[in-house]
Length: 228
Image (cartoon, rainbow, N blue to C red; front, side, top):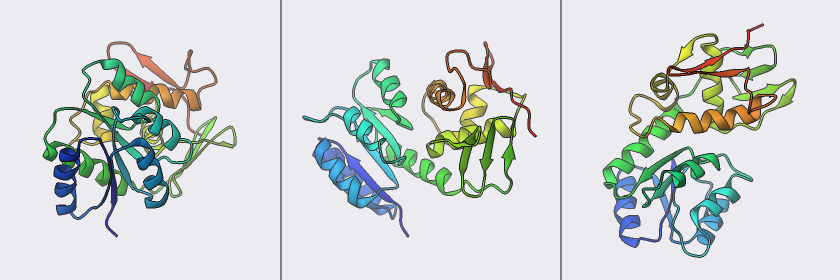
C-alpha cells in the first residue's frame, strides 16, 4: 500500500507543486489550507506523514500539532518562513519530528519525506533489550519504565533503542543523526538536543538532572544504565 501524506499550507501554489512531486513518487496525497481542515482530514485520512506549516490562518500549525499529539504519533515535518530559531525549537519541543525553513525547493521537501518514510518502514529489530529500569520489546516496538508503559513516538523509541544498543559509549550529534535520522538527513544537528530533552522527560526520574542519558560536554551524549 502506498504511504499517505497530508500537506498543510495556506499557499495554494506550494500545495500544488509539492503535491504533484509526491504524487509522481507514488504517494497518496491529501491537502489542507487551514488548521481546522487539517485536523478534520487527519482524523479520517490517517496519514503516515504530515507536512505542516506553522503560519496558518485562525488555528496555527503549533496548535494543530498540539492537538494531533493528543491522539497520534504520526511523523510531522514543520514548515516555517521565520528565521527565528525559537519557532523551530518550540515546534520540535511540542512534538514535531523535523522542520524545514522556507523558501525551499519541492525536490528538497520530497527528499526529506522519502528519507523519513524509508527510515520508519525499515526499522526492524530482532532482540529485546532489558536494563535496570527500562525494557524494550523490539518486535512490537514498545517500551516500559519500571514496568509501566512508556508513551514514545516512533522517533523517540528509535533514539532510545540506539542509546541502549550503545550503552556506555559516547555518541556525538553527528553519529546520532546517522543512526536515528539516517545518512541522508540534511537538517540542523540541534534537532538531536530537542529530541533528547523530550526523551529525558519520559525516562528520567528528574529530567533536569538526568542520570540515564548524560551530556558529555563538547562531545555528545552517553547512555549510562547497565543491561541485565
